[in-house]
Each structure stands twice: as structure tokens, then as C-alpha cells.
Amino acid sequence: MNQPTTATAMLPVMEYFYTLQGEGYHQGRAAYFIRLGGCDVGCVWCDVKDSWDASKHPMQSVDFLVAEVKKTPTKLVVITGGEPLLHNLDTLTKALQAQGFETNIETSGSSPLSGSWNWICLSPKKFKAPLPEVVAVANELKVVIFNKHDFEWAQSFAAEVPANCKLYLQPEWEKASSMLPLITTFIKENPKWELSAQLHKYINVP
Image (tube, rainbow, N blue to C red; front, side, top):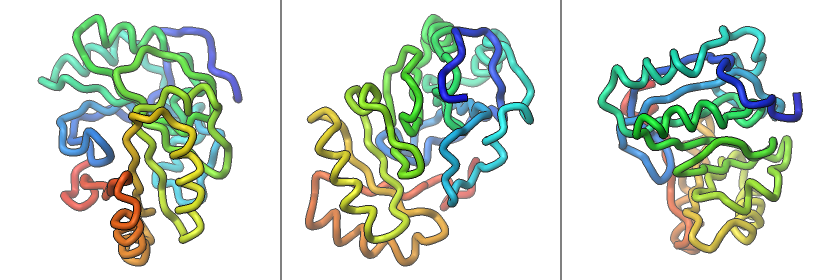
């Protein structure tokens, strides 16, 4: 599936949980995560490969998901995947915002944008390039650093996102020990960038 479905009240959901946001600009905030099934990007180092096949995950209604979020005191809901933009997210985000929740998305930007967002975190992948329409509205650019060549690739996207977009470099978790020193040096030389270190994995929360 390369295009988002029409607006729907049912979505394939791998998991949903309340935790702390561990990455990027909103790191440390209490956040409710809704992880949707389905991905056509297929990063070799993905840590949620079980999310790729949408058919493996139960369909949940928007009403059910909103009710689950309302059981917590959260103000922030993060829609992630997989690649969440494989699905039309208009209905889900409108329902969440109608209840007063902030809606954030984490996306590779490889599918057309849908949904109403308070914050768009674009994490582009080499395996399938982001669409210009998503790059143009990103609030946050988060680039995973897997090898030293990724720095130049990150800079190419920094030149395309809006001027006020926050810029983050994040080491691929399995290579953090070797990539973090390189990222540290790069940020010191290019201070427009900041570090995203996957706090949730260090403090052992989902």
C-alpha cells in the first residue's frame, strides 16, 4: 500500500501505551503512544519490525483509542508506526484534538500527509525518500545515524526543512557506542543540530 486509505474510524493497531517520550524535542514529556501497523519503508535496523505487516494487527476503532487515552492524565498523543501515514489519520486526529489532546506524529514522510497535527517529526529514511510536501511542514527533523556517511545526508535535509525546524541526530541503538562520539563532534562543529539519545531505552520504559 503506497497511498493512504480514505478517512476511517478503524485502524490496524500494533500497540498503545502511556509512557515518556524518549526522543527529540518533546523528550521527557508524558505521552500516550499509538503504534499503527503497516510499513513500506523497511529499515534494516528497525526495532519494531513486527509492525510492518498491517494484517497481523487488530483493527481498533477511533472511539476505542480515544477512550483509552482518556483513562490517563496525558496531554500529548504520539502517532507512530510502522509508517503511520499509510493510513488516513484525519478522523483519529480530529477526535483526539476535540478532546483537548495535542497530536504529534513520527513519520518517514514517505506517504502523503493526512491528519491535523500540533507537531510533525520527520525522520527520513534512505530506503524510501520523504515526499516534499511532508518535508515542507516538518517541525522537527530527526535523522538516525547508522554510519559516518549519514551526516552529509542529514545536512541535505536540513537545507530543505523550514528555517525554524528543530534538528536532531540520533544514533542507531545497536551502534550507539561507535556513533555517539562522532555525533558529539559533529554537533560541536554544527551547533544548529542537537542530540536525540532515545532516553526511554536508557531508563527502561516502553
